[in-house]
Amino acid sequence: MSAVFVVTAYGGPEGQQLIQREAPAPRSGEIAISVRAAGVNPADAKRREGAFGTSGRLPLAMGLEASGVVTAVGEGTEGFAVGDAVLGAPARGLGAFAEHTVLDASQSVAKPAEVSFPDAATLPVAGTTAYDLIHQLAPAAGQTVLVLGAGGGVGQMALQVAAAHGLTVIGVASQSKRTLVEATGATFVPSGPGVAERVREAAQSGVDLLADLVGGEPLRELAPTMTSPAGIVSAADAETALALGGAGRERSAGALEAITALVRDGLVDPHVEQTHPLVWAAEALAAVEAGHSRGKSVIIP
Ligand SMILES: NC(=O)c1ccc[n+]([C@@H]2O[C@H](COP(=O)([O-])OP(=O)(O)OC[C@H]3O[C@@H](n4cnc5c(N)ncnc54)[C@H](OP(=O)(O)O)[C@@H]3O)[C@@H](O)[C@H]2O)c1
Image 1 (tube, rainbow, N blue to C red):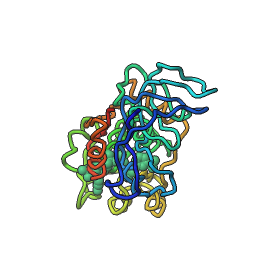
Image 2: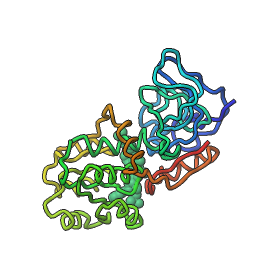
Image 3: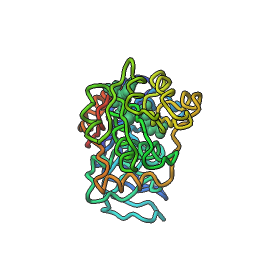
Image 4: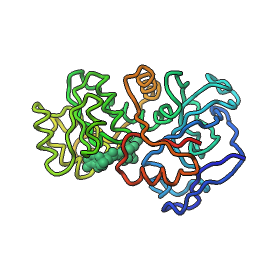
């Protein structure tokens, strides 16, 4: 038997628990892994609450990104072998908060030896989002990017992806994240009342790209600091971004390979700041759900 953290009833945290079940077997296009680490994301709690629909069969395994070692390869699945270290997204109906899971091979890549299992587990969701936010509008080197929500899991990687791309980077986050933001080489601007004025002082020719991880009023407040609203890309609130003249995040095909290479080459550090054993998955989720994460949180089975 193998432990997995599941949703048994859509809604609040009372509808989630750790259960035992047979380790799942891979089908065609899938690889089974012994999980070494799993990244925690705000989307995990949103999924439990039913924000992405409530038609999924229960119990629903939780966790959207994982790293581990391949234990079996589905029939006809090419590119992976038993014993390979990998990172990727769970196959449909399966989850990463587990001792064993099955990954979608088309959303998985080999884990470079230089990348730790906890760091690798942050790349399929948070890492690819950071990569896409910065690259979606193909900004030219030297342009100015502002990351809103710069101290969280996606935000701090977005700062580093932008720096690696040769952009001038500004990070907006709460005071407690000043050192985290400045360590990436970005200019730190504290969030809160008056933030737009502080951004104008930091970016006197205007912001060319706004990578948004917060949405709502904070995004609306910063939109006038831009050279054009078409430069807004949001992972948190596509509706507000579209209303302002920007866009939601679009997934790109090569993002997982690209962000993995940036971490391998030491250009991006996913900043895993908290690790939790699988038996504390509920606490790990609650901490991320509170909305003020610093870097990434990872579950280690
Ligand atoms: N569309 C997609 O494919 C996709 C993928 C990944 C994530 N997302 C979404 O993107 C958002 C961020 O994800 P994440 O994993 O980075 O979340 P996270 O790790 O929880 O970080 C969110 C960050 O936003 C900061 N924040 C909150 N209010 C702020 C404000 N007014 N100004 C500046 N910063 C503020 C928080 O801390 P402080 O307030 O303490 O600074 C925290 O550091 C979530 O809504 C998530 O669901 C979407």
